Length: 541
Image (cartoon, rainbow, N blue to C red; front, top):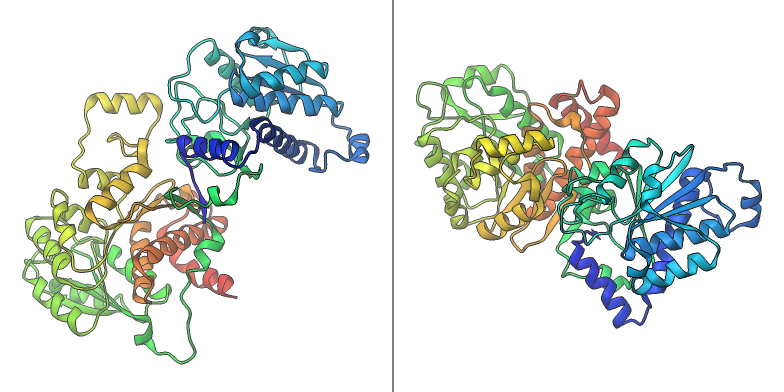
């Protein structure tokens, strides 16, 4: 899997490459500049072979390139880009936000080289006063090391870039985006494309940074592969080939028992749909058998709607919700028949259900998937998770995660989030990766923190960022579908980490396929279930 770095991790890779492997910083900067120029030619001039004399002669696109450089190494990359484009005969304008005499190291070397090639480099104040027509803007203002809010006059430059409505290519990361959290540090460049080096950064994938990044290109500029694949980097990007390599086989010599039996505790009065969607998704994803454990007063309702699924009537309180007495029947059933337990979709929450869920976590002895009301039922009881005799996967959205962490909302937070257009008021959205990792390590569980993007965290501190899914999936029932899919992969003997990774990836991938047909505005959870067979047939073949 491709690693995803923090700013500090990438700085270490850069430093070790220079100090231990003897690759000079100027060489890395030159390669970075060449990589960006290559992408500029591919995106805007339809040819990456920009060094070809024939290509240069045939190019009829005479758009000028405006390169905005900061005073650090990101600006140094900008000087290289400007020099190469200028040397090819492109019209290039360069603007510098720092004083030339304050430039140091590799940035100063490449500033001097650009000047020797005949480039005029203007102060950024001139950019603010100038008018432009039909240009491509290269943002080389701020790199991945940004740690404080962007202020004037640099913020004025960024605001003008965003107001020009010309395409922007950012170097390494859009200026003003936190490399570690994706947060906007005061203001940020809105790029059409971003060219980064070695590995993607967390801020490229976390919102709002992902939106500002645009199309992301990860370029090899010569960092040692040993460093890029280091196990010290704990966060990974799940891509198609990674996920599909986990798909369980379907041997010819097999039967329904080969593919496992999931007991799904789900549903209550008014919430029967959650149980049915989770069960159907579980079967469609390959589980051999699915039994739905439901309040006994709802048996007639369910019997009229299930086909392939089986029903386990459980003691309830007479109002369509489970009684704590149901635990004995569930544990007996697991001991005799089921190899996976899923709890939560639509079960409602009260003290009895909290006791019921807690008991099943500690006593079931099989892998457990907990979602929705199952998560709400143990909010404030996180210590119970450490007592489980078998692996536990939790699948909260950010609101459920906040309840697990006992984080509350207040008026001040709500006002701040409304001002900045941020979704969650508990701080979870501001640091999704570290929140997930910390919880998984502390509780020794596998955590699937649903959202954009979904983060899967393991007890050993590793995390996996999903690369599929779309806004159309923000609709009722899609979480129930995910519960069914992860449970199905567990039933087919995948380990919890693999089941979570594959379940999340395929859930999003199938959602993307369904959205192509139905449109994001009209997508509903059953569209995802109905698309499972077609997508599985396609990827398996």
